[in-house]
Amino acid sequence: MATSTGRATGTTRDRAAGAVDGARGPGRGGRPGPLRRSLSQYWYAWAMVAPVIVVTAALIGWPLVRGVYLSLTDATEANMGRTIGVNVIPSTYEFTGLDNYVSILGSGLFWEKLTWTVLWTVACVALHYGIGLGLALMLNRRMRFRSAYRVLLILPWAIPPFVAAFIWRYLYNSDYGVINAMLRGVGLGGVGWLDDPTTAKIAVIAVNVWIGIPFMMLALLGGLQSIPRELYEAAEVDGATPWQRFRFVTIPGLRTVSSTVILLGTIWTFNMFPLIFLITGGGPGSSTEILVTYAYREAFTGIRNYSGSAAWGVLILLLLVVMAVVYRRALRKQGEVW
Amino acid sequence: MSTATVNTGTSGRATGRRRVRSRDERSLGSSILLHGTLILASLISIFPVVWLILTSLKPRDGWLSTELKLFDDSSLENYTRVLTETQFPSWLLNSVIIAGLTTIIGVFLASTTGYAISRFRFPGYRGVMWMLLITQMFPVAILIVPLYNLMAGLGLLNQIPGLVIAYMTVAVPFCAWMMKGYFDSIPREIDQAGMIDGLSPFGTFWRVILPLARPSLAVTAFYSFMTAWGEVAYATVFMTGDDTRTLAAGLQQFVGQHWSDWGLMTAAAVLIAVPAAVVFLLVQRNLVAGLTAGATKL
Image (cartoon, rainbow over the protein chains, first blue to last red):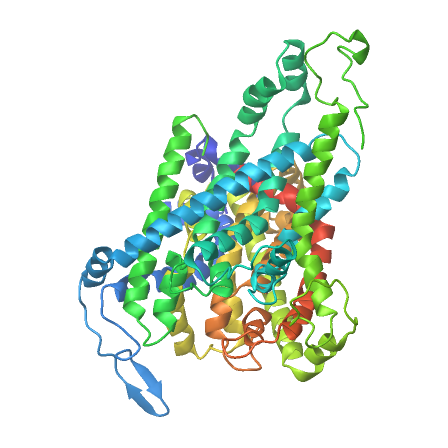
């Protein structure tokens, strides 16, 4: 129960908490220590957050710590401790310091995968955003069949990604796929879409663009609709051309939404596992393997290289965190709130 | 094709000499362009799905055709085969149970957390916010091995609870963000009124705020369901028994490296995608509102 001292220490930021305390009736006497005091003031907030904290700590915190540790060892499937029947085989892997990182960063493979991952992310997010914005602008107009278009255009989002991946794999099939059938129909030869590194890359980007546009489109449409109409009317009165209205009213009005969806889109695309895993399996060779799928393959095919995979994972996480921090800082410089 | 109908009133078409076109007005040409583009985009957007459905209705070896045929002795053969000759029904059951549990637990955890970080400023608040943001970035690759070992140690491999727990880590952080965004839009006076009427903080949350947040709860539930329904990496690794697979892991069996049967594949895909798509289209309006409310306040 809150005491008056407890309330007095609350700053203005704690107004809500203070209000809550106020409703809790008179305190229990005595003079509790600072720990008890904050415990009594915040226990319900903590109690509400606690389950998530516990789950996260157990399932992300612990594996993360362990993953970082594994990345500093030479653990593979062969020397990992395990239990076979009644026999317990102890782990024999050793601490090797930064060896894994050195060998990953020193190999051309990492840079090759990184280049492709960056290319993949930039291409996908740029196309998502560009096409999504274009469609959102069109849908934001008054016209016939608007809701019909809207429903048809968000359909790809409604299809679970793994199903979409299988559908597209069939469409791309070089012998029986409909894309090649169409090409042959107009007199062109079929293309082995998933057999050649370049076309395979184009193919996976196309699928991801197909899947990702609806989210961008709807988020931006929401943003467009929240721009006050008066701004456009004012611009019109001032004689602004459509381009000027777009440039000086629409774009600034979409800033918050844009920055958020671009950040989310980048993270999602960077980590987009199912599409590449299910469509090309990383192939041909490992040409379409992005960092995430490669790390997964390290961990679960052949002799499972747990430590190497963990090191890849740590590097991926570092890249993303750096990116998010830089992005946030850039936004803050422009006066964004968060 | 619709031509312009509404004018904002400042200057009608009657003036004739105006150079600046109002937003809601367009010429026939741009109308055609507009609708043409949208029709093209819609076609691209629905084509794969339509083709999937058409293929699934072809007979057993209909997919092995190099010609373009929309219909070809339509039959439900592929569907009967999927439902009777494969493990599909048990995969479906697994997926439904796993996704259902993930949804129920996930929504509950996400809403309590979302409420706490929306209403209270408590020590550790910033830490929780950052944690929720960072965990969304976690690549599956770094967690999957330790999590696999953890599950193996606890005997949770090939067990439904194991996968549900793993999906919590994916679904809850994002859902908590979305719920926070929605709770932020509910005026605090409502909480205060509830408390003045003698409700405890939990009582206020449970009996006053949660009912108000129903649209957002629907969105969150849907999002967690879809996350669990469509996840591939954890499902592939954690569920390896033939009858413990989920749909996402199981479908890979139909089109393996040595043997593939796209007839089975397409029928199964339709059975999975159509219910999901119908529910999706029903909740999509709420979904967008929820996503942008959560996201813009990120």
